[in-house]
Image (cartoon, rainbow, N blue to C red; front, side, top):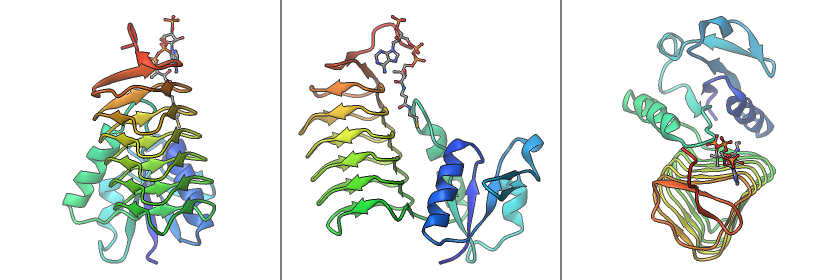
Length: 214
Ligand SMILES: CC(C)(COP(=O)(O)OP(=O)(O)OC[C@H]1O[C@@H](n2cnc3c(N)ncnc32)[C@H](O)[C@@H]1OP(=O)(O)O)[C@@H](O)C(=O)NCCC(=O)NCCS
């Protein structure tokens, strides 16, 4: 496999670097807009510089990119970055940690990241650019849209659907068959038992729209 440059150098980028290296992929380093970080190292890898300058030194056909931008409320920034660079001809690699369990009958989109200990069950569909984070579980027949973040230890039970650009918070549980629209933010630890149109936040057990939370 071609070597990879990770775009971003924050916490999620470090997790992505770890997953790629565990899978035996060569990682050249990170990019970051913050010039105070340039030439320093993270996880033993260099922070090479800003992405425009760094990528100007590489051939699009010889190097792949990985999206190092995570998100604790939403993934719009992650999507914008990836689309900008894809439009410029760069390709984003799919990241699968060797401890992730992925059914051969699941469908995984372009640039998806399946991190340590995650499980993607039979007939699940994971959209482009989505993160299934540490120890998260995506059960059978679940459909997750594009640029969703399924945060650590979240559980999507069978046949749930999750709209694009949603965030399923750490440790949240979404009951089987539930449908969540685009831009749904499920708070950490929530238990979702009703469908939701999207465009807002759900918190608590059972989860309800988050009055007062911006
Ligand atoms: C729901 C969430 C987005 C709210 O964040 P916020 O807008 O910064 O909210 P605040 O922390 O200011 O809390 C506002 C109120 O909501 C409550 N609240 C916050 N998060 C909550 C949650 N997950 N469940 C229940 N109540 C929550 C707070 O107790 C507070 O209540 P109060 O006004 O009565 O004191 C956030 O807490 C959350 O759960 N994010 C997901 C985190 C995650 O998945 N991280 C993984 C990263 S890898």
